Length: 305
Image (cartoon, rainbow, N blue to C red; front, side):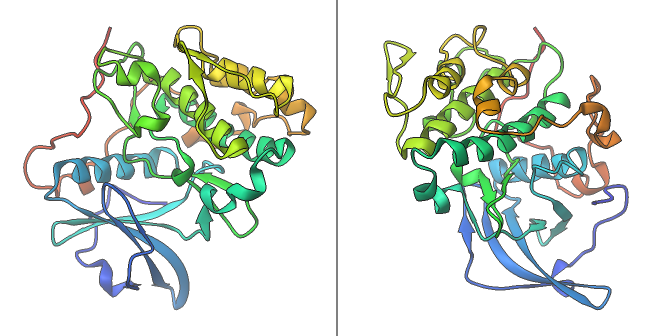
């Protein structure tokens, strides 16, 4: 767990031996494998490095730093161990994974049972986020990391935010292929239903290796998928966000029962840090105060209705 109340160390390089070349690259920075030496023990980790002189990269680092505190203990999300700032770069230290959802795509195509079980865990990750009024806003296969046992973990919270009741966004966020129609419309939208649309595109790509067919604003069912699966996809890929299924109702769909998915986590059994709250969490000020100058967010902050 990251204690954001304490000053960050000036140089992470004394504690972490970063290996090159990078093992991953995104729009916000690069990811490296590293060896973390702590209490005379060594652990392999991943280190994401953000150039803080780039506004959108800086905003992503701020978002991931906040989420690392807020989502600590979420069993379906990647664990972030530390956050550093050094030489105008932000460092996020997290668990190292063997790959992402794209690496196991071939084993998922038209395998409803296996895809359903993986998707169910991803949905539970989103459920715990939404319970804290957190939206991810960039759900896609690249951001679902997979461990050696094939277990999925939601990652990359650079676009995430805490949304107050009635909060709305007015600018596009995330990846176009997985973005909901309202996100790309240029009009104000509620970001929670947008996450559900992204889940729909994610599920379809898991099952078919292709993007869903949307004709005249409606999802065209796939004859190779079961009626129950097509029902899930239709409820997620509903163009009207007001009619789109929410995460709680989604997890109660019969498709999950048919495929033997266990009941979702009881919110009453969740760690205190993850229980639903209407309050926005405090920012990790001790860390973010080290950033020079006013923050320039890459995404317009939500506004109240």
